[in-house]
Every structure is written in C-alpha cells, then in structure tokens.
Image (cartoon, rainbow, N blue to C red; front, top):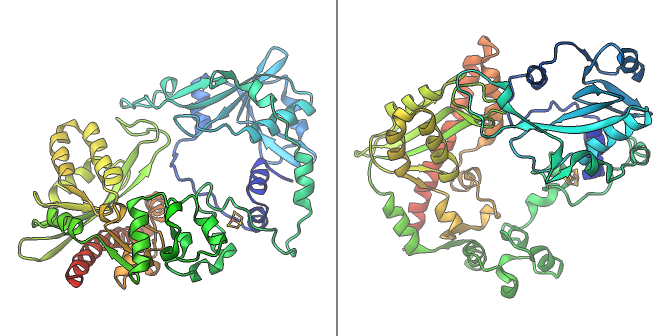
Amino acid sequence: MYHISDLKKFLRCERLYFYSKDENNVFKPYVRSDENIIDLLIRYFGIKEYYEGVRNDPNEKFFSQINNYEWFIHPRFADGDMRMNVPLMHKNNDGFDLYFFYYGITIKELDLLGYRVSLKILNKLGIKTNEIYLIYLNGEYVNEGQLDVDKLFICTSEYKGKRLKSLIEEGEINYDCLIRRIDRYNPDDTPPKKSRYCKLYGLCDYYSRCFPDEDETADDSILTLVSSRYKNEMYEEGIELLKDADIKRLEGSRIQYAQVMASRNGGLFIDRYPLIEWLNSVSDRPISFIDFEWDRYLIPIYPKMKPMDVVCFEFALYYIDETGKMEHRTFVGTGDCRREFVEALFEYLPEEGPILAYNADGAECLRLAELGEVFTEYKEKLDKIIDRFHDLAMPFLEGLVYDIRMQGNYTLKKLVDICSDYSYKDLDIFDGMEAVFNWRNMEKSEESKEEIEENLKEYCSLDAYGLFLVYRWLIELIVESK
Ligand code: SF4
C-alpha cells in the first residue's frame, strides 16, 4: 500500500524514497501543536455527530455509514495500492464538500498532488465532490484568554482568486504509473541515481550518505562560494579553487571578495580597520554573551499569542564584568514561561554594557520585541535591552573576516569549531531543533525532567560561550595581524 507521502518522496528524489522506505522515522514537527486540529474543527463547524475512519478501513466502511452521518472525519479510501484519507467531509445534497487543512497563516503553496490523488480516488469510487475548502489559521487572531475557534480559522474555497476545485481539476495525476515505477525497486537494488533536490526543502536527511566525499573537498573549493550563480559552471570548467575564480563571473559581494582574498592569502582574510572599529563598538564592560531557545506554536494556546507565535523557554548568559571576571547564568522554564523568562533576564543580565548574540536582529532582538508587546509593562525596559545588542554575525556577513575553514558556512557552530576545541558533537543535545524536541518532552516525565534540563543548559551554554570564543578569536586575529 502507498500513501501520498510516498509519492511525494519518490517525486522529490527516487533515491530518497529508496533510503526512507525501510526506516521507521518518527516525524518531528518543526511547529508545535498540542491541540488536536480535528477537535478544534469539530468545534468550529459545530459538528455534533460524525463518523471517524480508522487506519486500514476498507472503502465499504465509508459506504456502510453514508446514510447515517452528515460529517465524516478522516474517512479512509483506497484505489488498488493507493490509499488516502480526507481530513473532513460534509454531505451536501447529492455529493460531498471536502475540507483540507493548511498548517500556516498564509497559504504559500497548494498541495496539489495530495488534493488531486484524493479527488481522483473519490471520483473512481463514484463519490461526487461538490466543493473543496482549505482551512488555515487566522494570523490576526489574538488569544484573549480563551481560544476562540470562530476567529482562529479561515475557511476558503479559493486560491489567488480562482476556485480551488477548478485548480485541482486542471491537472492530472497518474498514480498507477508512479506506483509501477516505485515497485521496480527492491531493498537489494543499487540505490537510484542522485537528484538535484538535496537542498530544495532544507538539507535532505540522507545528504551525508549520498555525498560522503563532500567533506574531503578543499576548504577553499570554488563550490563554497556564497550566493554565486556561476560556481558550478566554473567548477565544471576546471576552476577548482576560490583564488582562481573568474572575476567577471562573481556577483561582487563583500562576502565573495573576502572568500577569494582568503584563498589567495593562504586561508584568512581580514578587513583590519573596519573590524577594529566594530570591536571598539563593543569594548565597554560589562560585556554579555547571550543565546535564547524558543518553540513555535501552531495554535495560540496561551493568552496574547497569535497563531505561529513563539514561547522563549531558555537562555544562557555569560558576562565579563569590569574586573575581567566571567559569570554564567541560565534559565529554563516549562509551559507558558514567558513572564519568568523576562523576569529572569532582568535579574541576571548586567544593567549596562554591550550584549552580543548571533543573528541578533532576527532572533534575540525580535523575541524581546515580541515579549514587549505581550508584557507592555516591561516594554520600555526590554526596548532598552534591545538597543544594547550587537550582532556577532555582522563581521562575517559584511565580509570583514573570512577563514577558508568556514567552507562558506556562516553558522555559529562552524565558527566555534574553527576557533576552539569545543564541539557540539560531545553533547546529548547538539542543535536547536533537538533542544526544542527535548523541551517538549521535559514535562512528560518527572524522571527525565532533570536530565533534560541539564542537557538543555549544556547546549544553550555552549552557544553562549561560543559567542565569547568567537569574539575572543576576532581580537586575536587583529593582534596577530599587526
Ligand atoms: S541527498 Fe539528494 S540525492 Fe541523496 S537522497 Fe537526498 S535528495 Fe536524493
């Protein structure tokens, strides 16, 4: 039996499907949803009675209930080896209205493949579809203390001014043919050839399996050139290193200039005076290094939240005081800990001096501005903290520093790797999403709560300490370049 998700994987990359089919990967959603969407939709539509399909129901199950109910939740259907279910179906005269759910506040892309498979199977089974609706979240809705489902959802039968049903019917999907192609493979086969979609929807989970040699390419390979339209073309022509890049085919950004110059200089480029100027702008003491962790909620379950808002649940802070002494503070909350987060920040953060974070504007500063909107009594104080932030990514993103060991990677983790012996690989929690997944589990078990909290502190503290390490490295680079 195949599901729509199998077709999607196969169409993205046959090799990806081949690798994934024997793995029991547990889907870990990037966005958190503690509420059951279907339960909320039942309230939204005021549904009193319904038939709910279960996994592997044969088609007959639906037909046996067709005269007993108006509403159907997740009814299961199959055509040959192709299975699917529709989130909600509503009987309407001689046919049904279908309701699909979109996980977001703006519809960025229609899941046409999924809708077309569903419609085709229903047609084949002789089930008439009258209208197709898409339900998504109202980005303007604010939880005023209690979840108001009437205002939470938006239900539409149109997309970009066109009728959804017509858009779906415009295209054909031949899933029989796709299934025949999928069936050609068996686990003992050589994996299918590689595709070009490895980074299209974020890095494919199987990237290191498919490209094990990538780490062995030269640090200053032309393939590490950032935002370059022509790097592959140059590589195919035999230009292997940044230092040999064809200047006419560079877009001319400061980052690219820094990369090429680092390759020509033996590995490092520093734009000395602007870098000294930047370091001078953060030379006051105390100086703080801070990192936040947060989780994003699909449904605004807490007061003053909108759909897709975040809850900051952790920060780690290092600061160096006027005497040169370093202090370390952490905060990890549970549940709706937004107020505790802000109050702990006020308690621990030095009252003055620069604060360094990585990608500060789009991360820590944005989070504090959001918290200022929620806790208006703290807004002024939070705004003053925001004004003290400096972005440690700036010297790198402005092309003031480039070390070819960065390999075109501008993350804090990469920089920490280059300038120190510290490694995230030694930690139980080694990246931001793992931190989020662990935090979600923290409340579920008293036994593991303490251990998870410790692991979270270790991870976030390395991010904050990493800021200090990178800052110190920049100072060393200036001293050494005298
Ligand atoms: S890394 Fe690329 S080639 Fe390999 S499975 Fe993923 S998408 Fe396919």
